[in-house]
Length: 255
Ligand SMILES: [Fe+2]
Image (cartoon, rainbow, N blue to C red):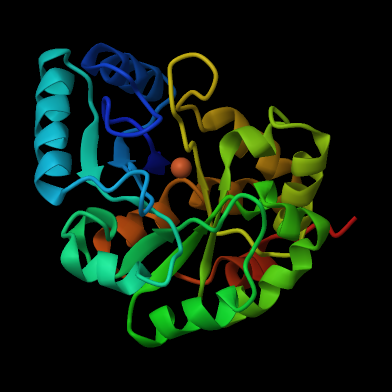
C-alpha cells in the first residue's frame, strides 16, 4: 500500500515531534503493509513554510533510519499545501510541494472552518494549468459534511478526492463517517490516506479503512484507493477511472 498524505517528518509541523517518533511511525506503517509514504508536511502561509532543502534533508535522514532499521519502506516528498491566493506561486517556488516532484499532483487543503467562496473556480484554474489538486479530507470540512455531493462538480472537472483512513473507520465520529460513506457510495473518492501525525492518536494505518470501504465499493476499488491510484499519483501518470471499472465488474451498493 501507498500512503500519499502523512506528517511523518520530525519537528517540521504538528506531526512527528522527534526522529524517533518518525521512525516509530514508519514501523507502524510497515507493520500495516505500507511500502511507500509520501511525507507531506503542512505548507500553510504564516504558520508552516518549510524550505525544500529542509524537507529533502529530513527525508534523506529518515530514509537512512528506515534502511538501518531494516524496514521495507520508501519515503517520498510532498506537502499538505493550504489553498490560498498564492497556491500556484508556492508550487512554483518550492520543489518539494508536488507529490514526488512530479509537477502533476498536489495536495489541496481547504480552511478547516469551511470551503471559501470560489474555491472550485480557483482549483479549476490549477487543473487547467496541468496540475491536479487532490482535495484532502473534505469529509472533515463542515461545508462538505453538510453537502457531500457538492463535490461532484470538482470531481467531474478532473479534481481528485482523498479521504482519511480514520474517517472511514469512524474514529473521528459518526457524522464524518456518514459523510465518507456518502462520498464512497457516490463515486467521489479516489484515495484513502492516513494523514497520520503521531504514534498515538493519529497513526499511519490504512488496512482497517480499506476493509471497511470494501463493504461499500467492493474489494477491488477499495484496494485501488491505496495501491494503483496512489501509484499513478507518485508516478505522475493518469488515473484510470475507478468507477467505470467498478460499474463493469462490481455493483456499487447505493443504499
Ligand atoms: Fe494533513
